[in-house]
Length: 158
Image (tube, rainbow, N blue to C red; front, side, top):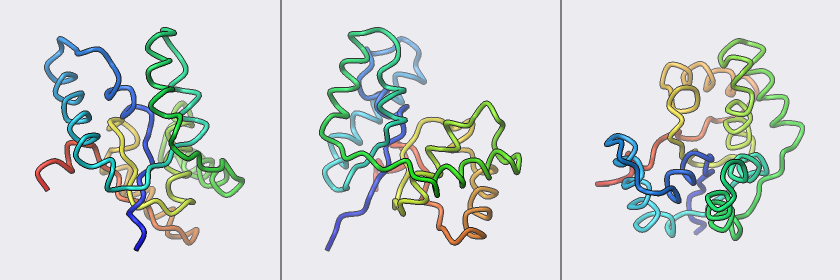
């Protein structure tokens, strides 16, 4: 039986590899991500996209290198026309703002490729329950099921 699938959005990799933060909330997210990685990553088939690679490659060279090293062995999903069309629909229907086009694409990629989960720390657009409800409805109209969108913290203790 195949393992469940997880699309890793860039924020997860950022928290996984970043230097420990002095900000208590950020530090808690970093710790939860590291615990998820140790306890759960091996229980799933992990996937990313070229969008994740592009985003992870930005910033300080040494930090980007750490993020890209973690991503290197993870299979990359195809950014196909279906995903592009669905992402455009999310923005065109004003479920997500135009400035969140990359966030829309992350969601669309995970949806079109039938991922079981989309793991993120981006709770402004991707992990926002009010937005998820609207995105799920639009996805169903197009014949897709939205993956469960959650943070690493939500897995801990289960």
